[in-house]
Length: 121
Image (cartoon, rainbow, N blue to C red; front, side, top):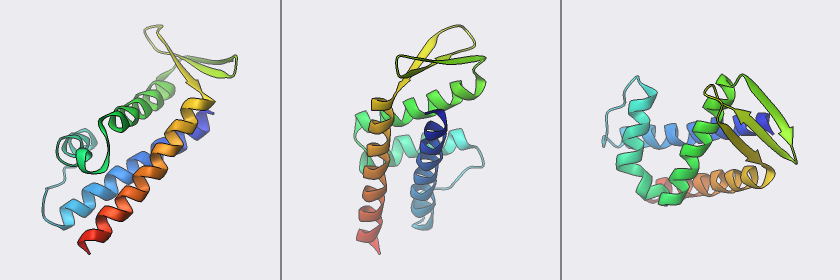
């Protein structure tokens, strides 16, 4: 499950980067070398065009889960959920249903990118 989460994170980052590069190509933005700044630009200027508010929250959740997974001192499986212990001893849960929701989100995002960029070309 954790490997799938990491692959979903890569897909999210690639989608966001493709949107930012496309908008940069159209001369609507200037890109930064800082990934956090670029995500902020995406969130403020383009997320409404490609995502609903709930989908944006899912993307933030994906990024938080993978960040915490990479920093986590302990992870374990309980009742078909992966439990991630954070550094301050909080727990985050990752279920198969949540992974499926994330996969559906990525599929929808890729189709939105395809449709929105096709309109301009």
